[in-house]
Image 1 (tube, helix red, strand yellow):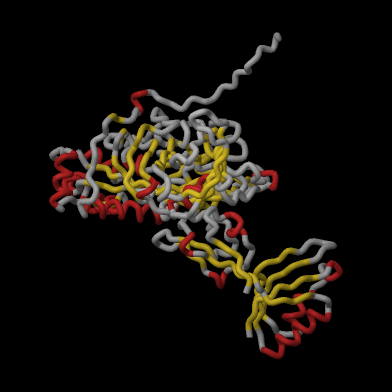
Image 2: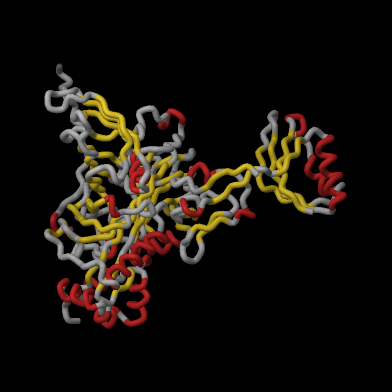
Length: 404
Length: 134
């Protein structure tokens, strides 16, 4: 096929002649027409994902009261936020929980309310109780502040998620003889169930596995509004084993995402209470893949049969950072409801919502077709497999020597 | 007639074939929805019982005479649809298949299959499953 440019695709979007398919629809089309023929026709493929993404949070500037305060400690609905940023800026993380939450002292903890829920309440327009303490200075004399805030009273609220959209993820199982409560959900003993967390064939980075189109500055669907790829995400680890299409076989790339929370909707940002683990935030993300050439199209039309995930034991291998993989399974097998691990048939469940992922890919497709969303060329590419970049472990170094 | 009942057995009755009598002497058909029976402690059973009205009445009288406390199943688990994200974390834990995926991978709840074990209520990250008292 003749190669396309982003500019050409944007012209088509403006004229209303662009051809957009979701990452699911394109699989069917490629099967029927063949990759070469289908690639000629399709300009954009839209992806989507919706699931708990723990490394998420918001930056708020709540405005200056009279007299002013330079807060050093701050809470939103009793959930502690980080106050070490200027006078009235703060960062609230999705997994923060109130200091008086029983957590796992009442095992398995319920984790009824935390950072993820504050974010959901804020985006829903609810009043949030802000409590702040400062030590008092000549320019910021106030030492205590208690007030309600909401999304309309504050200056900025920026969703800034340091790590979202994991490119592939573990399938979690439990080899021990007791039920365990993990961020991958409740895992029954002796391989009672297998939980996975990826939209598979709809997931953004699985459809652009070599980061050929998604990069720093890419405009995306984030939480129901428009956001951007800010950087590669924390733990971005592109130099991992990949299949012949370049799709990683284990968790690999990640994205740091940013966007204006005021544009977003509670439909796509949901606080999650994960039993025995804690609080998180389910985030809806959709990323368009411009079909610049046939190779990009081929990868964007990879199906669940072509994408594999590693099965990992969360009773021992995961917590103790052992790299043992029990099996490799496809997303098609995972979605069939049953996989085989160590000779045993194990029922599967998903923590990521495929139904919502599809809805996001469809919304983004409509935005593009209606001319409301133009594609962007990355300002910088993300480090790819050739960078050799890999997640480093934390090797513990004692802050003293034994001789002392 | 047909009803879903909660039966509580005193510890003394736990090792006796009480429920068996419902079939043999009272012609009742039952389906055990849930059972929690351990020696030397109170036993609990949730049954769906079906039969002729007269048999039904006499069967219940028999149970009560033997010291079994009988109550209608008054707890119902409901799905609050607007809170469900259709992830399916509950599907694999539901013992009766009351929670399941449809072809679109939407999670649906067939309340008639629910035995009110409440596992879904405990594990749903979005609190979309709730116990309601009738």
